Image (cartoon, rainbow, N blue to C red; front, top):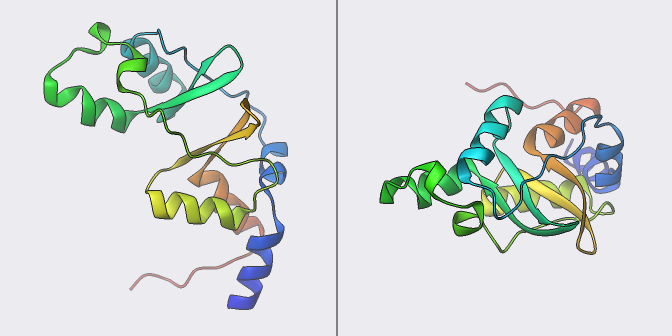
Length: 146
């Protein structure tokens, strides 16, 4: 079974996942308020937004960024800009990265979203749910939890 896992995980690539996604990538500007970002995230039921300036990816904003950086300081979301608390050093993948690459990055860095870029151009987002759906489609079964 482990050999099968390795074959599937190393041959499926991010491009395959992006082809199956129908929704456009939502983004937020660094100058937007955190309130604006949180409202978009709540209405679309997502937990992070790529931060772009024009077509360039300049950061990523997540619920965790707000909770860890603004809440302890008691800063209201309408009083702070996304650029002030976003994560600037964004780990990204390209359309040619494998699903295995994505899983390893998400696991080692403990995050649930990966921007997909071509140079600096944001071309998509991969979530842990996308990765799990790809595994399910590959008929990879996990043993039951006891």
